[in-house]
Length: 171
Image (tube, rainbow, N blue to C red; front, side):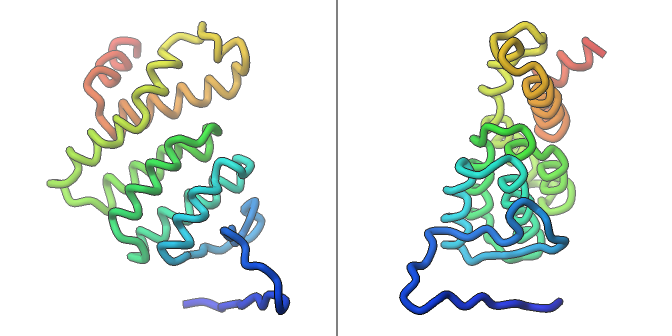
């Protein structure tokens, strides 16, 4: 365990609905919250910029890796993270791969992969394989990032048969 810090609120000050230690990722440290704290922060992620949302999401998974979260809380969190609009925050392919390869038993991986595919399949179907959608015309850079990351999550970690075979065909 490393150093710890406390913040004392002014007397009479209202407690915030949620907190994000290390907002913007400017520090080099991890943080953990209790279950209610995670639920509150995860509910607030859509209000944050992509960088801060990514900090929240990555620390959430790190807390699970450290044994500070239970599996139901992790599932609720990933479901919320999957709905975020920014590609960096919503899809951290290495995060999902780490869960798959380092934290889950081989017996639990197929169910996890199927569940993971359900979280991202509709978004990938909307973007498709070709850079010719309305989303590509609106924001080509962000849509290209989404397409790449979603293909990695679905074809790689989730091992979605349809996406995997289509990606192999296109290689």
